[in-house]
Length: 457
Ligand SMILES: C[S@@+](CC[C@H](N)C(=O)[O-])C[C@H]1O[C@@H](n2cnc3c(N)ncnc32)[C@H](O)[C@@H]1O
Image (cartoon, rainbow, N blue to C red; front, side, top):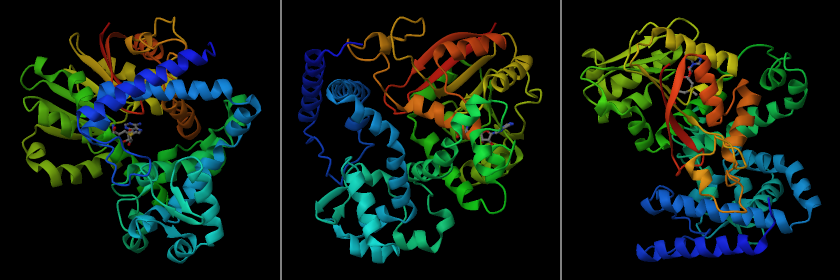
């Protein structure tokens, strides 16, 4: 990697002009950080071309910082990264984002926030100042803070009064706030046990070490008495994740129009079947089976009853209890579909899951995996996809987009799971009897999601 400051500046200049012209062309003012009416789901914010432009600016600006900032500061910052998680987690825990949202839009003094939350205002001020210094919240005058477009996204969808009345359901319809809460709680606590675990992988997972539960898995522990709050928070995070992914990448990945009438799509680990619900709207000529463990299928029954009861009574959608590690009961389906599932499992377990599916597949069955795609930071591997190949020098091939690598490490801590590169997916599937046919990457979302299609080898 070169530290070519002039090239980095030139990328920033060119791409910033492209971004500004796009906003000018659509008569939309470029949103300031302080714009609390910002809508992250508006078409210009979601535009895939502009997503690429933004990624290039962020990559070049980050690399510029890494090139000019004294190395000791970079290492200190990295060592102190946990402070960001803790500070944001604390404010989400005590409902500061909701208090600010319901208060004076020009800003609230920390004394008022202290009254609203019951917490010492000096602590609130320190956490808010730390985050304002990093562009999450804005300090408008000494000890007076307001939301900005970044902090707004950590706000729950309910008012402060509603959250206080029913804390168990505080995170409903607020997946990003749930994501913050979860990572600042079980995520960060598990992280403390990562190094001992990796030095002795036969020892319990970081999450098990943290929770003192030895070999039980994360989800099993969430279902235990006393963990209702964490369980509801996890559910709120997952519900939103599925709905947050643009439909197109999943829908086109299944390619349902090429499938015969009544062709069967089996969604494994589908939970309530949110992804299947989307597929059925686009491909009404197909049949669907949503599989999950009993708790997932119990919830799925309620979900479908409320949204599309006829689909289940007519037999178009079947809800079936199935464990990945048992033989797959639906033989010769047109598609076996894993939506945000494989990353929860290490290679031996994931291989077993794919082998079980292969055992039931026919010669024309497809395996479709929708998951995060981790990318190498350098070019020159056969894994390098078209997006990475178009990355201008001297940027990192993966544009330094941190989310897939961060999720890979978090999954390792919580579940013993794994974020995979295209090479990893290809190898794993090959060992289970599948051949990679195509990879479609969604450039718009921070998780860097992709749909990978495999045929029976
Ligand atoms: C990360 S969630 C993904 C849910 C859904 N596919 C989505 O994207 O919203 C993983 C799902 O796998 C299910 N699961 C976990 N272990 C399983 C197993 N052994 N067999 C079948 N499903 C399992 C969980 O109940 C959960 O619904």
